Image (cartoon, rainbow, N blue to C red; front, side, top):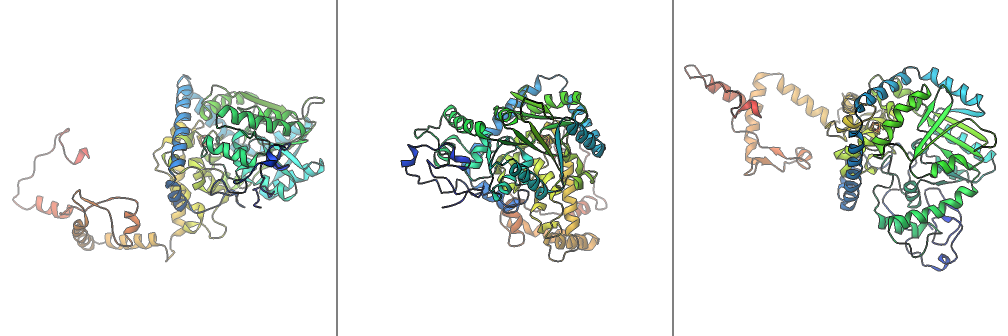
Length: 546
Ligand code: SF4
């Protein structure tokens, strides 16, 4: 029997226990389960959620061959894009809001140690317990210790990027604790033994018939006649999760924001599953990246306008849950806040790259990115895909521990996963200049490779530098290159070159060189006694219009 990413045996229909077990289904116990043990996709939960799988170029090439994936992505991202554009367009001071969000985030990072201590004081004063975690292992240890101390072997979870980043579900499973994702899309991903491929819509790569198959195979209490009608799928998940909510003693959440001046935590969501987790269990554990702070309660006003419009394309989130410590007789009676660093301090130390910590995880940059739309989230090999993933992941993981950075590091390719079109910057609600950070990270990656003999790019650059540093050599190279026009087709495009040129023509066209070099043209045009050609007027067809 194969195992789910929780480390539990993959469930057969009608099974019990674990995330798909529910209360079991007596009717289902007699069904065949031909697909229960089969993987639902090529991706299995990795050991390192910030660095897994192939490097981006290889993974992207494979993803491009999946037409169904591209159809799912194109449909989903274009729908969200249109909704976002409509609700953003109705806010007259949207740009001012973006400026305010950006300024607030800059202020938070500038005062981070002081604000974190203020948050700790206020959470503690209101009955909560604050824990500090340097890295994923420490955070996982803290959470597992709390759950064990409560005598629980199952927790319900609110969708949380921070807990995905640290691989909390797998760490809990290793301690004999099952974590049940309660967000619908996260539940689909979990049941499929899959990885999320979008920050906001983790199962964006699945269509509804795939989801029906996953429920039937892995969710023990799914109705046997379940169709792929979205409402039926949602109702099946609702019934399954309701039983989990009613029995859970411990819930685990992330946090969208934490207010330093009051110790208040905030989670926004659309389904109400988060509200159930945050109010019903006796104990609540919140894992939060240290950058998620806002200084005061009033500052929430800015982000609670920016976030829903940028993420789900709504004017406000259907559920906005705020809690401050513990309230006797109301909600969880024990509250633990785990403040997670996991590489954030090293990002903070970088003057350019630290802007990545402004991110409020709205996913707007993913939805407009032409690269993301074609390759999907798994190709990025990190729980943070798309443009924000391309700048955040390499910084969180730092220069490759195994390779010292440069081309040998799988995450070093991520800053190249962009056309630098700038669409991500235009939609980012907190104005993160993603293209500039991408260029900066590329420069660092090139610097890390500088001087390595085996690097073909460095070798090519050395040869180019030698040729260009001498007028005679450069002229000879130009004339030699012009001979290459014989390799061009009738349309003047070279499509296939022998190695090493094949590495270029494998994915790009190459214009055939012109028959005359610029130097030859110049010499001819300026021969003594030759009449100079008339100057071009603006609007003429000519060089300046290209
Ligand atoms: S970088 Fe900006 S647009 Fe992208 S997820 Fe973060 S806040 Fe949203």
